[in-house]
Amino acid sequence: MTILWLILLAAFIVGEIATGVLVAIFIAVGAAVGALLAATGLPVGIQAAGFAVASAAGVGLLRRPIIRATSRGQYRLVSGAQAMIGEEGVVTQDVGDITAPGKVRIHGEEWTSLTDEPGVIKSGTVVTVLEIRRSRLIVRKSTG
Image (cartoon, rainbow, N blue to C red; front, side, top):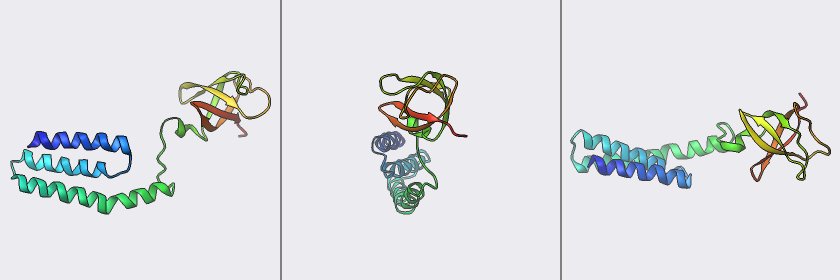
């Protein structure tokens, strides 16, 4: 039974990653509880009860507060390129408009970048990331 619970655990983690709705992760925790109870040799009924209680408790007690906290910006969840908005970087290859994209080094990586300002931002200039468009950073000269 432990193997079955671990397979369910993995399936619900994959499901959470695929959907991101913050439900499957709590069911995965329930499956982990079931696996632990199975590993101790407890009967299937107790395993199932542990699974059900842990899953329901997570969804019922934790899901809403987590969603509320993250939607308020209290614990802003951003990742990948979106996490760079507002960050500063250094121009490594002159940056112009869509006809003359350049490069900006930010967080140790070089990104193709454009500016929405007239003219070109010269290499060595510190810039701030305003937004991401089609995997390109839109930047402006930093003011500070």
